[in-house]
Figure 1 (cartoon, rainbow, N blue to C red):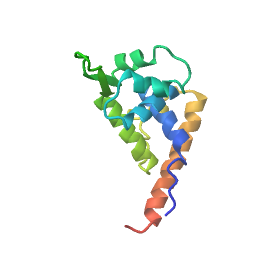
Figure 2 (figure 1 turned 90 degrees about the vertical axis):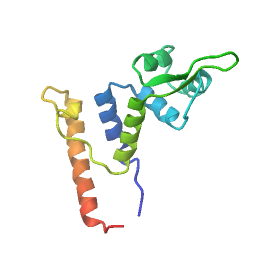
Figure 3 (figure 1 turned 120 degrees about the vertical axis):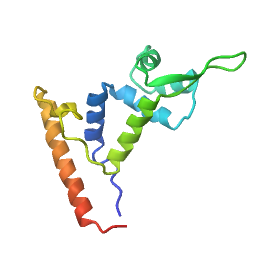
Figure 4 (figure 1 turned 180 degrees about the vertical axis):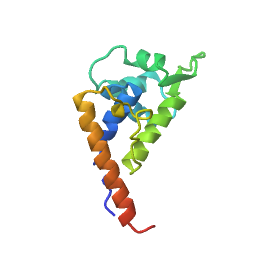
Length: 145
């Protein structure tokens, strides 16, 4: 079976950014840090160099509770950080959606389905409906494994 994990990446990314009020750079940073169980500021800065310049990104993610202190600095041991429970749940949700889980279509679960949204949000809303329809068809037509 062909794997098209990234077919709907743009739609999933737009939904996640909208729902959780994340920038593209913040989302990309969380995706990078997801595989790092614990990390220091040095590991954060390693990937941060690739992103658009924002000297406050680390502090903003900490303040918004996307990352948290795992271990405070003691003696020669540096402070270690980890993704918060909230961040891990969002990243797990991204992977589920890229693996074929449908995106919500209710206004309470998806801000793109609210009444007063931008034209761009409406375009993405239509694409979400198409994507969910495609996912349902794929599940209906594919034999159980």
